[in-house]
Image (cartoon, rainbow, N blue to C red):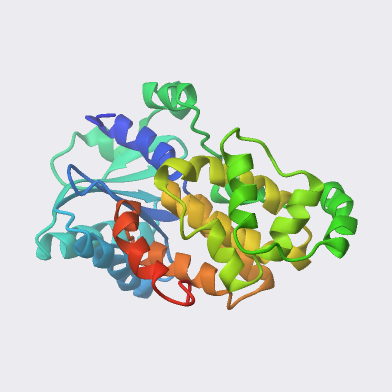
Length: 310
């Protein structure tokens, strides 16, 4: 997709993130440095420097040379301060800022000088009718109305969790290699766990050595089906057994390039196990904006350690 106009940029951001941002600053890398990043917009103008640092650090680490910046908020002092601060600091760091927009209530507003007067007053656009949105639907991409709506896709299914509890009570940790075989049998045809399989997987991914079978050998080509499999698992597990499954989901979502879903899975894991080692590893990958393209380089190093997630 080539974004040539402010309308295109405003339509592309939700497609890139997987949800429509609110009170956010979004950075889109242009060209070879095509990474994207989002941070919450602070309420206090004094905290804007933290926003700039959170975006600039990964941009520099990943060699981004050109960006577009979009601030999501109504016309507030903080939004204007963030927009100009990002522009100034990125420019000073040698990163070319092509455009800075503010988006609110399906209107985009120009920020940088030189635009027509109407652009500063707000130009309406209809996200649902943009060709990018239509292409996303055709490609099977789901764009949620908000980050909260995305997070809700991992909310527990109480009835399903209750149905699996007897199986969890009877389940034992699978022997070496068995979890990898079980996951392969479900990933390849795209099926979901039976209750017994789900219980076996859930009790097995609580231990480091067995849990590693679920993620250390995972490839990018397998990641999308892994996301589907573990998303279903997270919804069907009770809080007592969800942490390991959520952490594996977080990793698979990072590997497929879905950072927003990955963060939601990290949060789901940490809700019940705040110091979970695999969730902490994924959080580090997300915080540093580490590209999933580097996974084939990272995996051999992880495989040589006793606890790759530590």
